[in-house]
Length: 554
Image (tube, rainbow, N blue to C red; front, side, top):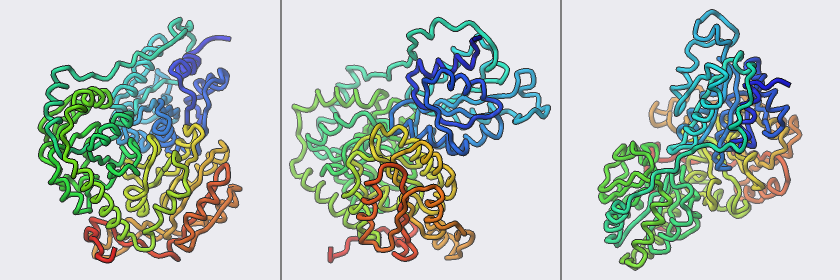
């Protein structure tokens, strides 16, 4: 049989160690997917829409730590991938997007070919870390290699490659370099001895130090915990949760201070904030209104992180995990941390959790109930919903790395698809997805992807009959005028019946954990609906209500 560029793509993915790809078969990618099917080395997960496939590839990359792969068709198909590429860019997920293109003779001529979109490559460049077009069979392997290396080089992100349909079909000699193929991914920059010495001199003087870990420190959990053993406190960005288990007494998790005054007050007693692999995003710092310690030292492999949001007193452009390893070797024996700091930090953490919990009304025990019944290493995937913005993102304890996945872009409707992809990459771990009813119905059809793939996933739908988050925002910004937030939707029990998925409904707050436990005991897809219209509406959250304060009765 002749060897084509489609065969090369299939072999290339295998050579990169890719085990799974997501997408939809269409007229402008048949040669590639035909080759993937014939070679039978890559599992292809058939999504119901490209928008879902994009988020699945992202969720898979985050959960597995491997390259996510998305395969789409041209024009509308590629455009449908844009939300997934945007989210992967926000989340720093290494993702390779391979899309078709019209015949090379007609590309960019705007002459009305099927699926032809004006400047598709420009569209993809605007939402990807980089984007390429393969213009001849001979350059296919080189362009694909460059694209995958881009995606897997820090800072990670999505990279797109267009392959015109005639080039996909074109014959060529099989490249000998595919034998024992290895991607030439460069090692992240290492800190110099002088930088480490200067950094150690600064850190060793601190008596009340804290770490702030972001997604760029995702592989630094072991060494970060050694800093906590020295007496450091810790907080994480939303994308950096679980790097160190959040039940550690010196880890605040994502209680970063936004809307929690006592955390902000505590920051002013901290004499060093060591930030590793975090952008210190405006979304998590209240548009930079959180006042971080003045002595802020930043480690990040991306030089653009230097001073991008908060100013720093020292910046090291290097890999976070290895820099922390070498820093620890230099300061461990010179530990001068105030012994009272550890006690004060643990007390502050306990108070902050109680204050936040006290703001949740009838949902104050949901995080603790769920934590008791979920496996320690289960994947915790959420959509943008009021339950996630409150207890899901801030109070529920994440206890394992690469197990907390949510839309970093704050886009609604992504959670179910992220969770499906994460479940494919879970490697035996249970996956729990929490969504609102509005977000669930965005991409409800991807429930059938979970069923077809036989995924071990429990879907919790917090049903308040509309867009609860938006209602709270309207109460503040539109003087309580609530327009376009109530949705007519099918009964979730009927949706579950149609999909042949076991279903439970919760209408008593005290039964939430027990009910989820029954769903978790089933292997395969399950749905738990929480009827918030019966249990009650959660109170508005900061900044759409005053910051929660401590109840003297607590």
